[in-house]
Length: 412
Image (cartoon, rainbow, N blue to C red; front, top):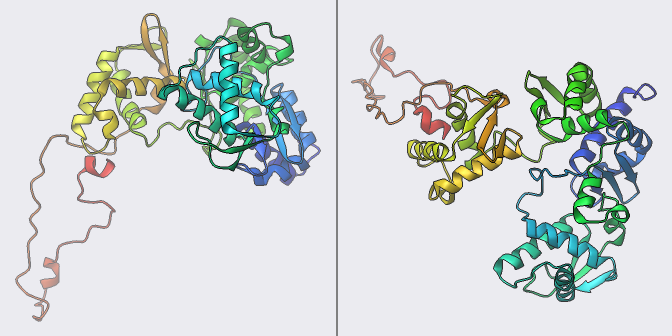
């Protein structure tokens, strides 16, 4: 696709494509907004790239660029972090209200109109702490997208503020064909339709948007297509989006060496992420069944308790005080990574999780007290003239950072 471009321009197109995958709504005043000028310069090459490779539509204006991705369908694992289902409902209701509210409004009026729209749509509204938090989260999400601007005051449903609406961006948010949808479920279904090339676009979108794509999770025709084309797809994804693929018997993993394209890092620094990493060897110890390892939640709770006991100072207290909640957070993280699945029979972890098995660089010797190190002190002082060979009695200086520190405390 880059035959007509110089090496520098081709590299810039790939850079812009990666940015748009990470920021589907790119604004000049938002994150990575400094690249909008470069996106506008290469807009035709980018539009061709996304249309041919993924079946995505790209709109580029001076003020913003909007990449219309496919919807996730029934998959709820890649949503906005911290946004509850009720928060998502308020996002939809707020967008509906904003279409007829004008360019500026008071926050109190907006909240009142949103709650009235919720009642009209049959959504029960209870003015309690949970409801206010969900509505506030929805409004703040629209602020982060640049659709709402806090002209005076801040978005908080319990205070007053003057809100300015960016109607141009508001009209660019929805990706699903609202006019064709006869119900909310139908709208979700239509938004998740594959691109013009059917199976090719459907599989490639999954490779680009998901950390792990398993053959067991794909329809038969998509799995067969991926097996036939996995080598070609690996080269294509690297050339177009800078992704490196790992092909295994269970499926394909697409990774970004620069860790830019992911909104969910694993391994990570949070308590749940580190516990999940340390728990993997035990969770994957049993033989897999049809490529998946069954996991009992009770067993994971016990494992979390053992890890918390072994390294008591390494974790956040809000999790260690409730091991059940910690186990649920670990499972949810693995699910969002595409490594864990919950069914009516319980939780399972796919064999691809073996890729993340931690490799210890030594024995932490948990629970073993180390004897104090006694160093021999030379009998002479700095004020004495050292005898021949006296310098040989000086203790050697550690050259490796952290030497002498117990391994478990160093890594904690």
